[in-house]
Length: 119
Image (cartoon, rainbow, N blue to C red; front, side, top):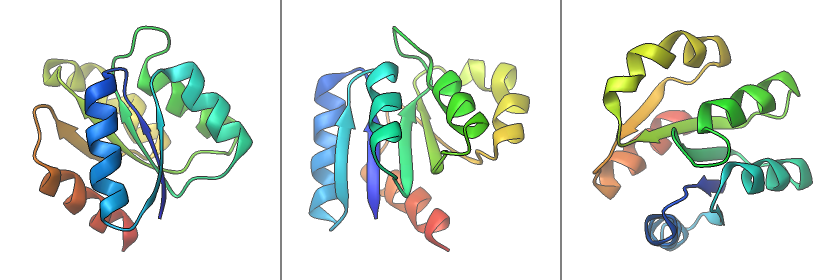
């Protein structure tokens, strides 16, 4: 799979990208929402793994924009703020995001979410 990892924590983005690449995926890291949008406009991705809260553009806003442009890949939302999920759950449902992984997470949780999306 071609996967975009959009996460503003550079260490987490790099480690997660390395893990997914070791699993045989083609992975591109993006360290903020604006860069994620640029990459999604330049090429197609099968999956985007995206952080809910990033400093420039929130992950949910990136996904909504991609959805409106009909460029949205399947998505896995990651968040360290699960208390915000109730607030954004209706927005996630509208754009079809069902997989949410809470930080801190184990790689096997992301692997399992990817496996669900691949079905």
